[in-house]
Image (tube, rainbow, N blue to C red; front, side, top):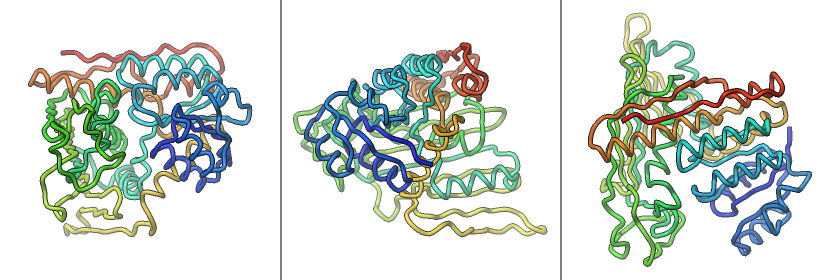
Length: 387
């Protein structure tokens, strides 16, 4: 099934979405970026209309849904504008800069009866999907601990640009990478929101900018006159339901040998455990069979895991828009991730464990309830961080 897409934000991630939507068979109809040169290049590359304003794109009757791939501080305003224009949206992570902004987006989605899918693309990695099937089948038993790490080797993105400017980004590596792992672990384990967190965040490498030595720079080159006031390393222990714990570590600039970089996820259960890598096809299940403990390495579909995950994300978005069904990652998933991020930063500031409390939370989104049951406002959840 195909839908008509508009793209707001014509940078690197906007192009990744456009490529994935093409592989998915969607119609790329229009684009807009406040940088006219970027928009022109994007339109020529992907064969879509170069809208001269956001209003022009949103008034295009062929555009059923909008992909928002812009700096984080614009997410809330752009999402609400698109929803008010009657468009469904695929919104890049993080959902917004704060829990309060997330709630504003949820309220706008409810009022417009529109779908919001969050760009938690790691859920669609082939190994992540396989891991979730093992967990759902009961092969791991009761999950009691999860550990996840994503380390870059001197890879701070866009140093000195909006990525490393807190006012625009809302944070550093925790917002960029950590939010993916928060969402993914909760998704894999089908866990309720965690209850408490002891977190740390540090800014170690990017200042002064002209003294930073790097191996690569996504969204670069560095702006030597820019700002670096965000975290480049973050770790946390989260306490979930019962004895369930989550150990997460992320870094933009780890001083580790290249061959030692091991971006992996370990999930431990009382019947089995598994390790997976999101992007290189590695996954190993350890469990007991006929009284013998052994490792099982299942086959993973060949090809680029990265391309497969992004394409599937657009497949599922088109399906949700066409069938008016709940997206795979919805507004409350974005809200939960933001609440954890805020508590993580607060814990780091206070240097102690803090409580995460999401009140009146329901796994079924209010938007989906309105789609199924017709008009009638459903009370919005409220999320607060208790200190």
